[in-house]
Image 1 (cartoon, rainbow, N blue to C red):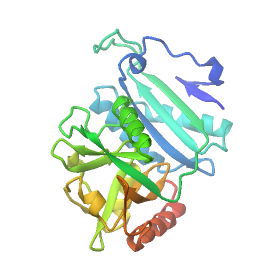
Image 2: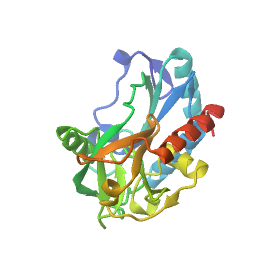
Image 3: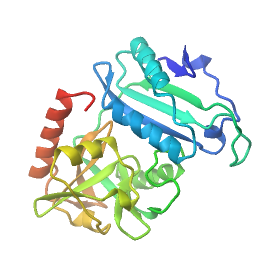
Length: 272
């Protein structure tokens, strides 16, 4: 596989990132992951818009969109069969601390295969919270230590995804997913004010379907009739069980309709 780094298309063993890059030393960076369909990154314009929003929210200059698109075109030409695209943008070389140097940012674009998701999944709620008032709430940063710990906790309990509440005890999000649930036939999801990431698939589901954005207690997930996760690589994945408690249906009728509509709309437009 090829990797594109700061304007150069390289073999993986040719890639050298400085040991002093702020993305390495303090996680000072942002990223995007998009699925690739027939050599085309899905919803790329939305991903690049969010990449710029995350960068400026972190205090980094917005990446040069034309350069990012050039890098994507070059790497997709080299690796047209790839199923997954990752764009990483960091603060560049910096000191061994939280201050930044006035140095160029680092831009890395990589591709790889897309793994298959199970038809349904089990999730586990975790004892840690998302801080909806954090300086980086809603930004897709490379600081993923919370997610690594939480996902390990979920795996130890036989689940494939961990679900966070926020500091108010409200349902928030997964480590790499947004959460939707069905109550009395109504499809609902936590609002962005919960501190959850504004996922691209979440955004499309909200636009394409009748979705209420409602503050919910964490316990509402296990009490729901149906529930599902969304992310850029899984699209819509029904939840079978929450903390070992099996839901009524996976997928239930509302979830099945959502899966069908998302497939129809996304298949008709790769950059919606």
